[in-house]
Length: 467
Ligand SMILES: *Cc1c(COP(=O)(O)O)cnc(C)c1O
Image (cartoon, rainbow, N blue to C red; front, side, top):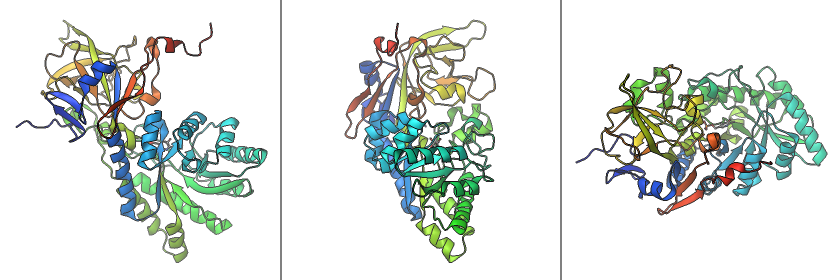
C-alpha cells in the first residue's frame, strides 16, 4: 500500500500513476497540450471553499454576506464561478468594478473599497447603484457627496476605519495599524459619521468597515475589530438615532500553505505559524459576535445586534488552494564549489510576485514523479534576468527555505507544480523580460478542462504601443 503524499487532497490533488492529477485530469497531459507555465484551477474546489463559508454563516445563525475580494484573482471565468457559487463581490478600482459587472454580479452585490478613488470611478459606482462605496477619509466624504449631488443620485456608503489592531501576519499585509495607509482613525470616526449623515438625500450611510489584513492566523484581531466597530455603531445610534445596517469585517481568513510540512522546519517560527494557519470562518464569526454580545447587555443593543448584517470579504480563502502553477525545468547546473544542483524553471516572480515582495512560500512538488519521495535538495530559480528571481530568500533572511526538496535526479523537462497559487498571482502577473503571460485552465464540474485564458502571443507584447 502506498501512502498519499502530505500535500494531497483526496478527490482533488492526488498522485496517480505516479503523476500529479488535479481531479481526474493528468497535469502532465495539460502541460503537454497547453505548454508551461500554466495555471490550473478547479471549479469544484472554488465551490467547496464557498460552501465552507456558507456553512460558517449557518452555524452562527446570524445574517452574514460574503463579498469575494476580486483583487485576489479577477479572471473572468473565475469571477463567474464565484458568482455561480452564490456569493457577492468586493472591488478596489473602476477596472475591478467593470469586471465584476461584466461577470454578472448585480450592482447590489458589489462593494467598492480603495484609498485613491477617482471622480470617474466614484461616478461609475454611483451610477451603477452598488451596495456600498467604502469611504477612506473625511475628504472622501465631501468628494462622494459632491459627485452624488452632481449626478442627482444617492450613493450608498460605509466608513472604513483603521483601529490599532496588529496581527501575526506579514507587515505588508497588515492593514489596521496606524502606520497603514487605509481608513479613518478612531478619534475621527464620530465626526466623520456626523459629516456623512448631514445630507441623507445624497449619502445613505449603511455601515462601517475594517479589514485587519490578509492571512490573519488568529480570531482575536477579528473579535477586537468587530468590538471596536460595534462600539462606534452604538455611539452613532445614540447620538443621531441612525442605525447602521452592517458591520464589514473585511477579509483575511488564512489558507494553510504548509499542508505538507516537510519544509516547514526551514522557516522562521513566526512565518511558519502564519503560513500554516488553520482558522475556521465559523470561529471568526462566533468570536466577533461574542465580543459584541459581551458589551451589549441592554435590550436595545441586543435588538441592534440582531438586525445587523455581518459582511466578510474573503479573497485568498476562496481561491488560493483552487489553483496550481505548472512549470517545466528548462536548465540544470551543478556548481563545483558548493555542490549545489540548480534547477531553472519557466515560472518566475513575474507570475508569483509575493514570492519576492513577501517571501511567500508556495510548496513545490514534482508533477512528473508525484509519488516519489522528495528528499533531494535543489536550489530553484525562475527564468528572469534578475538575481532576485529565485525560490529562496536572496537576502539571506531565512524567510524561505534555502533549498527545495524534490525527488532525486530531476532533469530538464521534468514538470513541477507550485501549489496554492490561485490568489495574488495571476492578478499581479506582468510580462517582464518579454515573457508572454501564461494560459489558464479551469477544470469544470464534470471533469472537462477548459481554457479560460489564452497564452499571450508575441504580438500581445506590443498591445497599445505606438511607434
Ligand atoms: C485584500 C482585501 C481583502 C481580501 O483579503 P484576503 O486575505 O484575500 O481574504 C478584503 N478586503 C479588503 C478591503 C482588502 O483590501
